Amino acid sequence: MKFFDIDNIFFTALGHPVSYLEFFGTAAGAIAVWLSARANIWSWPIGIINVTLSFFLFYQVQLYPDMFLQIFFFITNLLGWWRWTNPQPGEEDRKNELRVSWMPRNGLVAFFVITMAGTVAFGSFAGNLNELFPKIFSLPSAFPYLDSFVTVVSIIATYLMVQKKIECWLAWLLADVVATYLYFTKGIVLVGMEYFAFCLIAAFGFWRWRAEFKTYIQ
Image (cartoon, rainbow, N blue to C red):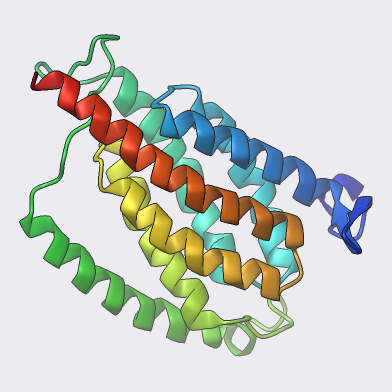
């Protein structure tokens, strides 16, 4: 079980210790996101490895909303894997997988409302976890509202990705920018660097999926 201990150091980078847990979780996440940007089906099983390791990492740095988010990600990685390989009639791309598409415009307002309400509700809950469950959460949640914002936007982005909606990459870009700040602030530098790279990959994914969609209407 030492592998899952954040104090079990693999190497030091730029003066910051990097645990085995952080390194291998980060590596799996980077591969999964890159494959997602290319609409590659293998992003889902590799993502399962990433979220499992990230669950243990975020618990130990008191980013509890992020920790809970990994449970959601684990389930949606399974759902996304199934959804992409089992499109409904008329949803198929050239590889007989789910094709990319745009979401309905009226959905944007709904997602904005969900984001604001979810951030307030989840942030209030996260901010009191150490008082509600002191035996499990001995330390207070770090940045409960910002962390909850990342959590809620990531949930929305994941839902859109499972449905292969192009807007998922805009949601990921928003979540990744805030997450990058949080992780650097908490001293998990390798994860912070990864999420900065995720910002770039999100921009690439948006461009790549939009370009793929245009091939369907030519």
